[in-house]
Amino acid sequence: MLLLKLIYIELIKIFKRPRSYIGFITIGILIPLIMFLIDKFGFDFQQHHFLPFESAFLFQGSLVNGYLISYYLMTVLWVHFPFFIILVAGDSFAGEAAKGTFRIFLTRPVSRFQVITAKFIATYIYTAIIVAFLGFMCLGAGSIILGSGDLFVFDKGILILSQNEALLRFFIGYLLAIFVQMVVASLALFLSTLNDNSVAPIIGTYAIIIVSIILSILKIDALESIKPYLFTTYFDVFFSPFADPIPWSDIFNYLIALGKFIGLFYILSIVSFVRKDILS
Amino acid sequence: MTTIIKTHNLSKKYHHRWAVSDLNLEVLKGQIFGFLGPNGAGKSTTIKILLSLVSPTKGKYELFGNNPQYKGNSIYSRIGALVEEPDFYLYLSAWQNLKFLADITGNISKTRIDEVLDIVQLKDRKKDKVKSFSHGMRQRLGIAQAILGKPELLILDEPTSGLSPEGIKDTRELIKRLSEEENTTILLSSHRLHEIEQICSHMAILDYGKLIVQGDVSSLLHETDFFITEIIIDKPEDAMKFLLSESFLKKMTVSGEKLKIHVSSTRRPEVIKKLVEKNFKISSVIPRTSLEDYYLSLIEKRHIK
Image (cartoon, rainbow over all chains, first blue to last red):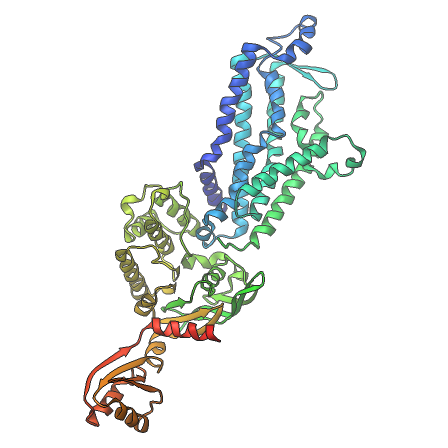
């Protein structure tokens, strides 16, 4: 019961801060703008790749539709989108330490373990909401501005997904994206427990993600042995539902690997925060 | 009497400096316990340890006979605290801030939130965001959150800092009222020596993390011969010789018409009576006793050492 109250309080804290809306505002402006610009000026990719197919296949709706652009926009979930999560998660502990609010909060009959758990859960809820908002904006604004239709995916070959099937795949993809972003949130929360100002965990998390992504994508033999230990190696799991058949076994293994990272960052946060002296 | 706070060789080391060193403190139920010391003496660190904000390097402490390190944080539902300057969630209203804290503490009604806001005279500003509050208003809100759960133990670190003279007076009266009417035990850290003198029943003085003195204010101030009493008398030299031969007094000096004697306030009338009986003409008796003198002298002595 107390944990539920703490989660509720943490959610209010998150949604009362202006920084929590930066992501929503950016997505709310940028996604419709991209869709509008593509509608107005075309999609460069279309000229080179799709025109030959348009004459060879029979499609339902336009080939360059809201779903196709939404699919391509999912790549932002790698590097760009985590910034919105980090901005909130990185401030969670460090912000309170800097502002001194822990002094009134932690002198209540509440354990630090409960506070950590509440902060993690509340941040995950925020993560789920903002990822869902991205999905909603991409598919919603895309469908309104560019129209809907079959989804054309270049995977190992060419995969054409019907409109309904594409929607289902997007739904699974965004669910997996939430899980990926939860790892990002967990890392930012852990770094936040180590600092008394929120700049360090925000920059630190972002730096770790960029370095890890570089190491994950480089095709160098020497790096192969460390790749399983980099959480970014499993980041592209949200593209897996767009394969045929859906590789459920791979997805499951990826989710277990990502879950281990979430668990690791959570435990490290507990160790760090439970022992932390609240000095400010 | 029940012991509310007890520390056993409590120590805290930051890097290479001992902020608190082998502190043995005991606060009993119903006491208003003054906690004195210069900046960096270890008062706030001690308070933070007691509130589990900081973990001790060595030693242990008990609150209500339990060690919160082993017994968990449930003990803090019986404690209200104001540590240094109170910091609230600025983007929330005063009422919302208190509601958060009430929810965590448990068993606190909305009526009680209004009640404490009324006590600290912030009821008409309860819907305003804390970021619009002045320093004094935030301090008053800090006191409100400390007394929110009707605590059995109230720990106040510089509670009157930043308050107007009226606010200081109200806070002092509130502290006295809580002690008298609700038998709340109060640990009060303050730089205002006269504040401690006026409202505290007991006190401890800390310097460089070490306990210098601990006891009840009355004994420390009035039963020691630390303080000087100035007596303006017709033959001060003769009076001094008489007192040295006749009485228990050992320390006294003469300066002009003034005879300066070290005597406790409890024994002062006895000395005056002896002088009058010996036909010395006394025009005035000026007791120079204040906590400030006592405090500064103790601190000075330690620094000379």
